[in-house]
Length: 361
Image (cartoon, rainbow, N blue to C red; front, side):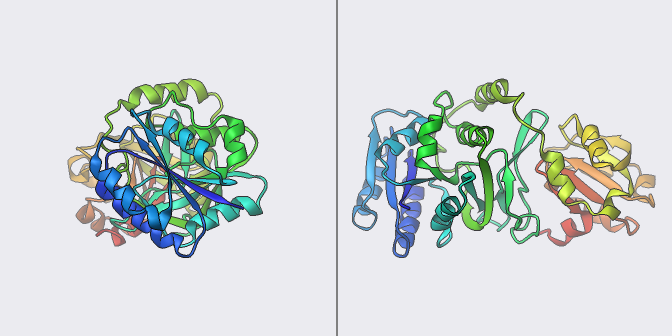
């Protein structure tokens, strides 16, 4: 089983230097080919950085005279790759030791798995960046974003409908058969869409938390200006009738019978317009008492709820786009009666408010 690590690079010399340094460290104990695609990179510093690693990495370097975009650049990299397994990686991902080999081994040991993603962690705080993608009504999110990486639900190996190509692996034969990355996208959705096509082709998209990498999200092609709204529209117009809403499934895995049978007072600050259908599917009894918008990226409860609500003896359920939006209410929650208050968010997180407050920085 031979491995090719395929990486596209665009105008980020300092980041590229750190990334290649990490690959060189890993190559001391792991065997893999490195294919670097300079995607119209005009920064002479990037070229110089790559040159310094010709000895330790012996990379195959592909040069695009103009910027083709993430999908097209990686497709060209695959043309130059010789490995049985392709590991796609962004230059802002720093794998732990053996993570690359473990991804390839997952494919080698499981013929029904078509593509596998590592657990991606923010290096800034050690919290989850991505455990694969989940889908709600006309939106997708990185699953479990923001949770401690040691959380039980994060450590659960899982099938997904789609994954992120920031750090995932698939067989070269499957990549060729499915036609590679769709170049209608420039730098958004092509990696997720390819993994979705793997899923719809009948193979498993697998999230393996034993493979880990630290992801400085959004840095690898930060000098490329694009409008993602058009690409988002293309993606959903193509796939809306093929995608299953699996947000509810991830929420359900985290609900004990006791939590499920509580009768909650609901405060909804989310942009998800179909939370009620999720609550019905989960069998959670609720009474909506407030619907409100965020102030910036925060929900300020003193500015939203009257004092009597804070004194309520029933548990509260906060519906948010992300649980961090209600984290700046320490005093308000400290004055609540002891209750099993929860937050559900669009990343599939179910978090007890007590747990949230205990993990505040």
